[in-house]
Length: 305
Length: 319
Image (tube, rainbow over all chains, first blue to last red):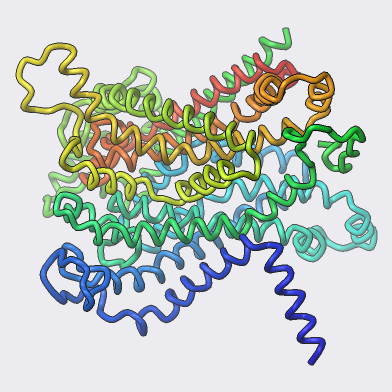
């Protein structure tokens, strides 16, 4: 019993120290719950007309009705599923491509590295959204296409970060030893290099989900997603095309955008601590009267870079 | 010598990127399901009409000769003929580009001014209310979809400012001043949306890089000399912080230019983004490809300019 209590206390302590991460995870859990159980929670259907168009919020419909007379609260709850799904699938695609390219480039080096990094640089410079628009437009509007297109074009930052780490891990003792024992390149990458990059990939995953959700909303707004799909992106797009602004129906616009903003904010909160912790290590004594005289020795990796 | 080599390498790299983008663009349209001729479809059109269309747009020739022809035409500024209005794409894209420029320019100005004032203030009062507030605002703005912010602005100013377009069509024989005023009234909301959505990235980058610069040894030296905080922060800190900011700004401008597509579509501002959005809904593929090439080329060129300025500011990178 006491072991569990100690464990719980330790978790709580960690949660308190990493407050932003905890809040972010809590918010994401709520939305994940909505995504999974949405159809059971939502009071009405996503295509069900339950009143006059643009009926203002009331006790029966706390978020009012949209331009088609559909309950906005139900739309927001049901939209969580597709929006998060796009975020997760697109992220999975881009992590697989990015981590694959990064590990292969970093591990093999030389010509392979050169070619892969030129390709990465190319996709890093070319503006992603116009490219997504072109690809999605040529393929035709569909949810599946949107997921694949977003994933296939967001992988560059992952590839660069993973490559840098793979380069560093490659020269570590245990990798050399594994190579000396005759392990194949594939095994070394999978068993020895990849696990070292887990934290890095995880951080990127969270940020990528946020990016993918924003990209989905953008593509939906440009009419590149099937109009039947119920997501926060199509909801904003419908609110725009049904002229909710001039009708004064703010309730049809606000919730979906707010959900996207909250999820993206939560994703950023989850990873913000890792960045802040690094910044806090180097004290800034701008406002202090007495600057510390002893210069802090820099960590080895910072000197090298 | 080293300087010119650096400049040459960068210029050649940028040109290669643009060429690669145009070739990618070419093959993207060829990779369309059912072939590109399917894209030029006329619903219910006879096979003869389809064949005639294929011939008219040169789609019946071998792919390689199509590619060469396409690149050759691009070099002459020929972007093809729009499917939807049968006019050359080039002049339409050029006109749209000239419309995008002032809107994005004003937006960038708003973003940079806001980012610098709040970014410096955040570092000055690090850990204080200003810091938390501006970082909070940046984090929230970071996650707000541009089209949603645009719609909120249209809603909030629906009685006082125009919600779309670039000119008031009912303005009769306006003087220059009246016309400029009208343009500004139309531009303010799109530019503000652009500025606010871009601001977040700029501010966070500036803040991080300023904090990074302030942890250097010469800051300690400057403080030890007894220089006032303001001099240390602005002269010693900010100047050095600007270098990394410049590169990231170049990349951020690329993302921002993409964001302009959504904003222009929301405000029907007749720029490149609006042209692209319209081309998507009208299946006007030459127009789509033309706007894509121009947006990509301008982003690459902005990056090149930032790179060159960076090399000029910081001689170390030219090595």
